[in-house]
Image (cartoon, rainbow, N blue to C red; front, side, top):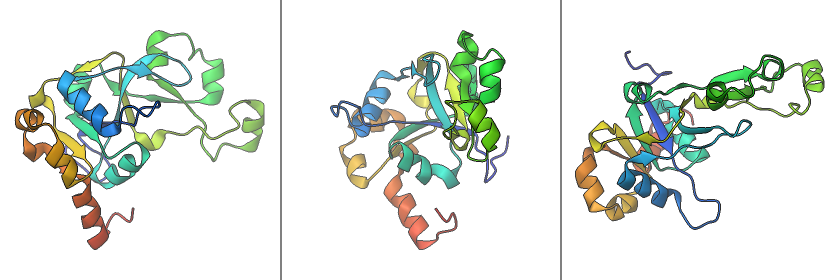
Length: 200
């Protein structure tokens, strides 16, 4: 599939800071790369396990970094698909409640409710507690229903925030992955500041 401005051949897993404050997003990225594994975690609404990725067009990279962190690792879609991955299902909440989307392990692992801001008020009232907005479609999420293992030569890119991050990144990882695969967000932000074609 050729790349397009609104689509990408690549998927990225962005890390987050640990809830207990002990692990930073930077350290979590280093840990993933050292172990060559993205651990599956519990999905909201279903508690099923999955390793999560987002389709990552160049135009949305900054937004994804704002949402999670400016630290991530990317793979081509073929690699994730070969591992059992596929796009998440965005399921209308009225279907979610009535069409058996709960209790099936595979459905649960891939499914997430969809209840956008433009849901008619009558439906919002009928399907409580889905009166709030539940809309993650902007993430174009893909999931793998188990830990996602990889080799360094399968990595398409690594995202870090600053030149300092690049300087302190473990040398053995930079050597094994290849420095040319590292994207520094500071560069991207500067490009957008000087030539703001994406209007982010």
